[in-house]
Length: 513
Image (cartoon, rainbow, N blue to C red; front, side):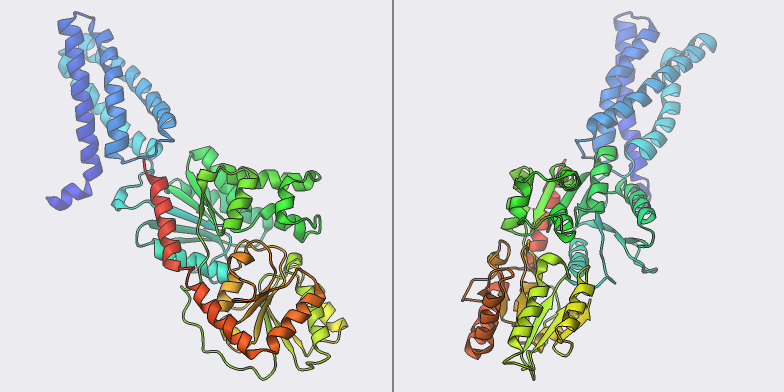
């Protein structure tokens, strides 16, 4: 009996709610007809209006457990359309049964209500309250929409997978991503990367379908995926969260060489149409988000400069302690510099190669290992060849987190000559591996690195300053050890458990009816 009730719980609740509305309908019908003496057809219409509101709120909030208040007017409009149709059906059947078949009007209304109840249930379940419940199985339904996901390699892809696994404990999780892998768990929907326009179209269509069954969309980027979330919100009213780790408009413009302006200056300068179009699209995505997760205080400030309301922004730092423990440090045979990240203009890898050329005069065996790929790769490889540094500079390409940790363990210094970092994931990873760090004194980096305490800060693209900083650290093993120890301590402040919990709290707050 218990299993039967559980299996058909929604139908039973629908019938109870419908019966309560029918009781209201019949009560008012009797009152209007027998007490007030109103013609039964008019009485039936008036009673149905009262019953409509009782029925709507019972079915929405109790039967289908739909707590989304943003959709209430759209749903009420659809519900009203069904009710008006049912009103016509009700009058027609009442006339046929009472005037045609001479059935007592109370019995006629009972028969009519039963037929309408069957039709209405199917319409409500399929079209109006189709999967909008955030309380089924006691869990809010989250659709994570991302451009990267394992087997894609790298920290961001690994982090998204770790976040999804952690959130599964409290929420129902579904994931959509671009990937060429064929086999996936049931909760992962993959869209092949081939065919630029076609892949976007397929991704959007699949994301729209999945969004209908979700309560909240969690978006990891403000490129195509973020714009799809914006469109889906306009179509369905679904809430979405954006994880704001970088300004897509600035990155695209800087990567194409359209601007050399710093990211904060970029927000206030008026550019040509192509850049302003990028800025407008990015702003539309962020401003219309129901919540924005900034990965640092700096990115929170950038979001506010773009136009996001401060109350929508939550700072949730990156963390790296969800990775397996890194290998034990080894002393490399030769002084070894290491860089990990995308090969893009603002990362300043070209200047690091020039620094290696300068350092080579006194350190002929110096090694510079570059982990990552990107649009600058071909130019950087040509530069290495032209400078005669083929034996000193090694391009590793994209490597897994496990491989990168192994390379970190046998390196001397991590270097990041970047002109922009939202929150330097690679610096946190290096520090967790015990590597001393040299980076730039820009926003984002300064939330992690304290100059002279747990690392060195050298101005972006200033060759002499960088050569001096690298020499200083390579010449002082005591300073290396100090930076290593202090780096391990500061990494402890960026806790994965805290990042997951803050994300879960934000989702629950946003999911409240």
